[in-house]
Image (cartoon, rainbow, N blue to C red; front, side):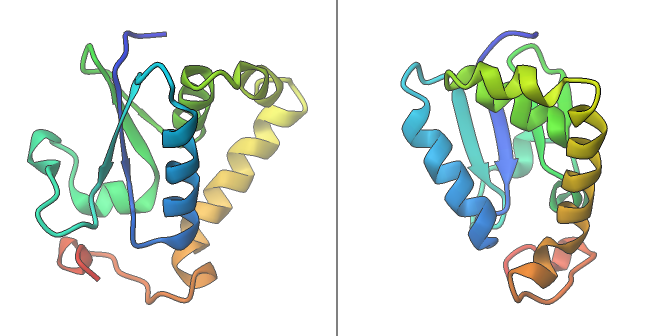
Length: 128
């Protein structure tokens, strides 16, 4: 594991994503996590070299040393940071790992549809 802080980019316009990150903020008593809502007007994504279209496709985070992680690995790092390491360990079990990866990939592809939002594929959809 790399060094904290871990900067987590998320889509605050996604109700499910927003609720999850709000909950993780509350659990982050050691202040290891920094949350960046890339959908917010004036958000500070300039510090990221990752295009908004990529950030929109799958959750991304960056360790303090600059290492970028994506997908399920982001959730594992968040869980570890907030004291839910047992979820990280469970999600790595041989039978659960491939299911977690596939379930998140399905969710990421369908989250806009699941939350009643139109599908956007370009950076111009950022503030919708």
